[in-house]
Length: 490
Image (tube, rainbow, N blue to C red; front, side, top):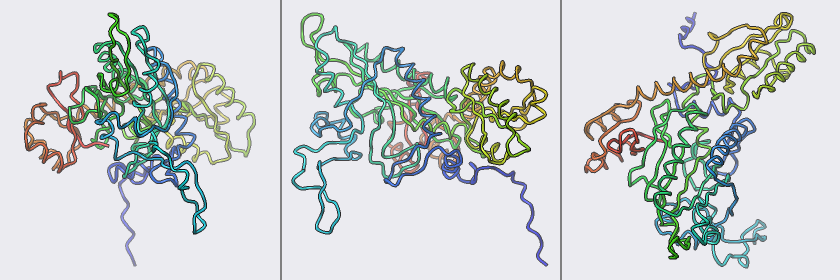
């Protein structure tokens, strides 16, 4: 007789594999379980499903309001960029050349074997590039719109898609086509442009901390990591739960480089012709990947409350197939919460109650509300916080919950931020030599190394950098450029 297999002490989780077993596999499983996105039949591209896109819409909504407070105007520019525009800026095109998709024909025709082929007679005189970014095409418009110092500053932003031909793709983090916003501003002086580039990286970092509950380092990129054509690049860097870094947004002081190539010039205050000083800045859907990897657990996604598509999910616990009185009670609660500006929803589907509850967990809904016949009779409800789980379960009156829901969501945000910051701060290690950097990553430790910036000039650095796939992430402002963070990254 075979002996029964020993019982595992490992707790059951909704997501398999777990973070500890296979972090990349866990990440993909979370996205699938939360029904946020899936791979497209187009290689390297993704389909963002309604729940994932609702999250991106909230990111757009709140960040768009922030940049409009900074007097930025939204516009839209062409998807296709003439190759000659990119060629005007040699350093810029060198940085993107390997990632560009090129349009060469404007019509298809039937080929000799019956399939469709590009029509030779429809070959374009000049190839067009699907935008990897839009400095050059926007610069062409700026050159027409800016004639005098009175036309400055000119601050523009567009929400759009871009295409960079990535070889290794991963949902949200790195796809050939992705969604983002790209801001492009022009100024009268160098000081104005520098102030703007710094202002924008702080706007991104504040947004990450105040809306995504993600603690970030704000700092300047090293010379080798700058955006092609920029004189300064500033970034916010976040630490994921596997210790890798994610650059979630960047801001660039472009000096007059792009103004010269695009001829953005104006009559100055002294009557002389001058070139504008420009900046560019962007944040993409990869921030969603960062939110997953910073906050998620082995049961799925944990949504930051201020961006969550659904902040409060109400689940009617029905004994009969259809308890209309209970559904009406839940709907009334939803309306009360919405009247307070909260995003609430009722799950009135025919799914089993446990499946509805687990669905909430995997989607990361900040607060789950359960209401059965007894609660309805007593004017009460039971609620559970996603970030804490069953230990937070509490039964209160409807009025108490409605009046305290906004405060409860704020507490969840603060708890998520504090937890992520504690993890990050405990995983930044100061080391003194390049040898210690190598030893750190050879031991597969989790986290960032903080080193003196001067160490990157040592010849051993290039060897260690290549061997362990490392990059200098940024020189945090808090260390006045004297320190640089080194990490593996996404």
